[in-house]
Length: 271
Image (cartoon, rainbow, N blue to C red; front, side, top):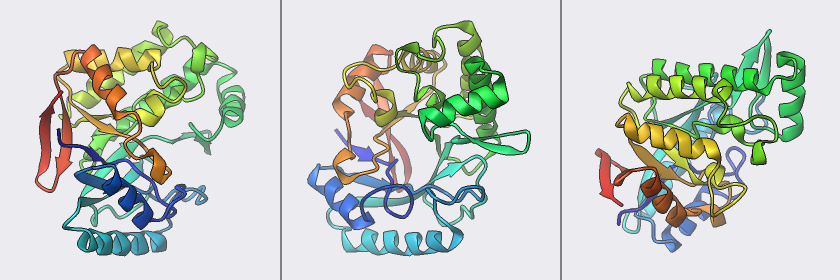
């Protein structure tokens, strides 16, 4: 089975390891394809993403590593593009389209910074209504369909990051699922794959995914959508995190295959 991991982060953004340390770990884990995808620039908060200058350094370093290890692993140069970013996307082999940020009343809101920030934003901007927060998130995520550059969609249900055990909202409630399904359908029509993000999906329980993950992936299968499996690793140790569970989970949701990204595009791999 061909294995690749295309959603990973280095010290160029909010990851802990250097690009070479990440790549060597991928080689040790037996991956055939490895994709670097450091966070694209966000002007309102540069603390966890690449500046325009550091992006140039990042591109140069990844290209050097691609050549250095070309006989051991296939390397792709990517970036995780936030929908509010302002990056030049031309250097990249692929683009992950993600939503980490919302704009409300002229203020930027972080979706996944911390539980405390999530609660504060929910109270200040949505009157404490977490369903309204989630609805805004999915409406923003739907705008990813307008970006032709995007290769696949990242962690589709990121808004439930702090919702373990239904702490803030019921992930099966129509107040949540209606906007989720609407956005899922709109993005599926673009023909672009979605990511099963193992770090996010199995964050709270390595053996069981969140409720909404099972719902949206099962719905994606019924819509004829396709899936790429990624770890969202921020450390070298996390590369390929829980891929075995991801294979089983996709089967439970109806999938018979998943996609790997090669230099020539996506290749379908049987489960």
